[in-house]
View: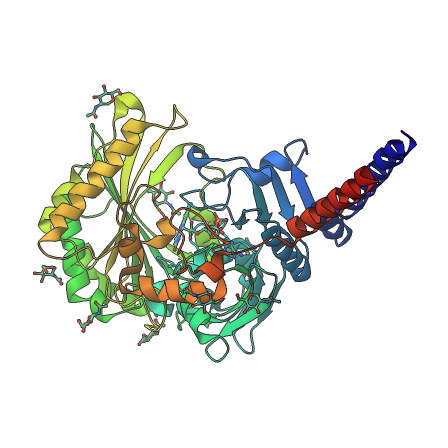
Length: 520
Ligand SMILES: Cc1cc2nc3c(=O)[nH]c(=O)nc-3n(C[C@H](O)[C@H](O)[C@H](O)COP(=O)(O)OP(=O)(O)OC[C@H]3O[C@@H](n4cnc5c(N)ncnc54)[C@H](O)[C@@H]3O)c2cc1C
Ligand SMILES: *[C@@H]1O[C@H](CO)[C@@H](O)[C@H](O)[C@H]1NC(C)=O
Ligand SMILES: *[C@@H]1O[C@H](CO)[C@@H](O)[C@H](O)[C@H]1NC(C)=O
Ligand SMILES: *[C@@H]1O[C@H](CO)[C@@H](O)[C@H](O)[C@H]1NC(C)=O
Ligand SMILES: *[C@@H]1O[C@H](CO)[C@@H](O)[C@H](O)[C@H]1NC(C)=O
Ligand SMILES: *[C@@H]1O[C@H](CO)[C@@H](O)[C@H](O)[C@H]1NC(C)=O
Ligand SMILES: *[C@@H]1O[C@H](CO)[C@@H](O)[C@H](O)[C@H]1NC(C)=O
Ligand SMILES: *[C@@H]1O[C@H](CO)[C@@H](O)[C@H](O)[C@H]1NC(C)=O
Ligand SMILES: *[C@@H]1O[C@H](CO)[C@@H](O)[C@H](O)[C@H]1NC(C)=O
């Protein structure tokens, strides 16, 4: 009788000490206190800052994480990754929260880069080193007043890493200075196990190649990157400004206006990378609207002789504004509210050219006004914009990104709006098929509904990207829909959890002791 009491006592003591050890050493609690003690934050749904921190640009794909971990140092990002991956707790990486697929968030733990705000500009070497939490506008503010620009987002609230690793075009500057990914000199990245690696043309060149076009959320957590900045051309204007045109056509023959634009492109613009465009077409039941934003990175005196051949043609733009803008002014003018007041779905097709059959589809893309759905098509002109062909960005030869979009007011998820967008995309791809005018889709406009997305985003780079990810993320810790899976092997996926082994060992010891006492 006494023995069995001792037996129960001993088991209880052991269980209690296991419990105590685990409460003190619970790796998540430890991680949380370390991050907070180094100036970081951990937010849960009950925190007052949580809602503003977790809301996404596009609320239609909103998911609410259980916990946002916001490390303030690179070492704490490492610690978070090694701790969470060894516990097999899946995460997502959060940057500027502009992913159209919402892939920076999920219902579990999110590691948020927002507190990593370090930013160093060196005008001498013409480089910027920026940490993962920097948004484009942070850099535009610092560069304002200088003669330098950076290839960043037209939308100033986009995160620098998400933008750059997916290619990253600036409709107004990329024809002069390339994609953002063409301009990166090096990355610093934390792997799933916390190891921090550098990627440059000489160190881990495979990763350097993959991170320039291979897309956000793959390979690891990018901590920091260094990118080239550019002194703009001589324009006769102060403070890094140059000339912008804001051209509008309302209720005119849009097809004719677009064809005039295509002719100007073929005859002049294809030979002059100083000229760039961002063009939006909106067709409604009551009329149509075409707006072309144009930039000219050259001396103002040359402007009339270059543009007259185009702008003197009928139909003429009306109104027609000429403005002198620095990069920060464009960001202000084209800023999109965060989060968007409407729900939206945006698709994208990378096109070599736009044929008549494609134009037929684009010009019949109409909103459904009875259902409060807006529809538009954005054309970004990208001929000769890809300046470094040795990157994972898969479209060296395209001329346009055609981006049809729909937005709607009255529902979280609108199957009709989605159906409109999908139908438009299918028709456009069919119309382009016979001429091979559309080779794929733009990864930075990631589309959760895109069929055959592996080939559409990555084309011939898909297998090489998978191989590289096998080296850097062998267990596919950074997993998300439309992520790049590694090639798995038995040894690579047998990710045995150390803590489980300890718990098992303690349980076995308890069993042995118990058996020993019972046998007395
Ligand atoms: C209004 C608007 C305008 C846009 N304009 C342009 C444009 O002009 N040109 C263009 O090229 N694109 C444009 N985009 C697309 C934009 O570049 C992509 O959505 C980009 O992925 C957003 O990055 P983010 O950090 O803001 O978003 P997030 O949603 O936070 O991140 C996007 C992806 O990158 C991953 N990620 C974020 N940070 C890191 C990190 N530190 N390490 C590893 N992975 C990370 C996330 O996990 C996610 O999968 C626009 C998007 C919107 C909504
Ligand atoms: C940018 O700099 C110019 C002067 O170079 C100044 O007039 C303007 O206010 C600045 N803009 C912002 C947003 O700081
Ligand atoms: C700068 O202008 C010159 C001539 O005006 C042109 O040849 C050159 O391509 C321009 N550079 C850029 C980056 O646009
Ligand atoms: C562009 O032109 C339209 C039409 O005139 C006008 O509403 C808009 O404010 C202009 N934008 C800028 C930045 O000049
Ligand atoms: C517009 O939406 C309404 C309401 O859902 C629907 O009945 C109608 O068929 C739609 N029209 C078109 C042209 O899609
Ligand atoms: C790009 O165009 C060149 C010449 O037109 C061609 O040789 C090359 O194969 C093209 N590259 C791709 C990836 O389509
Ligand atoms: C556009 O594509 C079609 C089909 O390949 C081709 O016939 C036409 O010449 C192309 N136009 C341009 C400007 O490249
Ligand atoms: C397993 O992962 C290693 C890198 O850790 C990689 O080199 C190897 O190719 C992978 N094996 C397979 C079969 O994918
Ligand atoms: C982390 O993972 C990488 C890639 O699998 C591997 O090369 C490296 O040795 C690992 N580091 C540690 C400390 O285990």
